[in-house]
Image: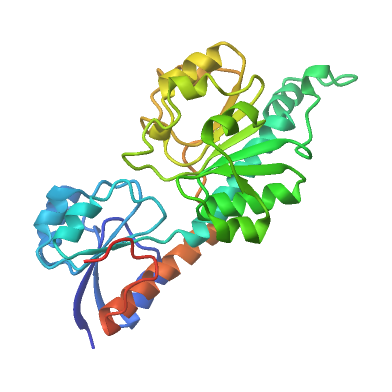
Length: 324
């Protein structure tokens, strides 16, 4: 029996997710007709949707919400909520929820990978070997550093920040954090302390940006704060590009005094004209931090279960971020 709840996917759901929802009797729609443009399809389907599933990078603002006359739940298939007009959704009695848990582990792993790529000269070493230069003893510029004993400052102590802190403690790093709120439950669990943001920037060997993008955190790391970063430090950003004033970061990077490892940018995809692409003191990845096969599978399963529970029982997802 098909339940009279229409689930609209802005992106194509994976087969397991789709099969599960259909088995539970839900009507699922996603763009799959070549003869119809995506825009035409969305304009037609959004009107009657009860639940809409949105990828984190897809803008879903006032215009879209206004067209969805029956909408009751917006489910983000990831952690990022900065593209959703939560205020407008709340005004219209629409719940907004996300799926951050599995992605948090994937992003924390990616941060570790970026740190190690920098500290152990992974990219330089591969280029050295592939270019045929390895014929004798290793040059000093390929000798790396250990993480043990380094000071890491984490900006944002949510799920990703906590997962990263656990990993860095296992490496023997000295971990501190800054967040807009004190997180006693995290401090007690993994024995870390909150310090002021300027102090974190001035003292940390590694600065990891994991805080969510909100109007308050846009350009949180502005020119003044980027200049406070100690010489030789590494800034890692896997959250959102706009948390850092990218132009100010580029100017500091040009001085050669600091390093960066970036997975996110103020403009995505990163323009081919960006100075970041030619900088030797920067490691770049194309916003892949939250993507692993395991995280994708677990996120899909959580989204599908949450949809079924909401449709059949009226049960709100545990990750609802607004109250209507």
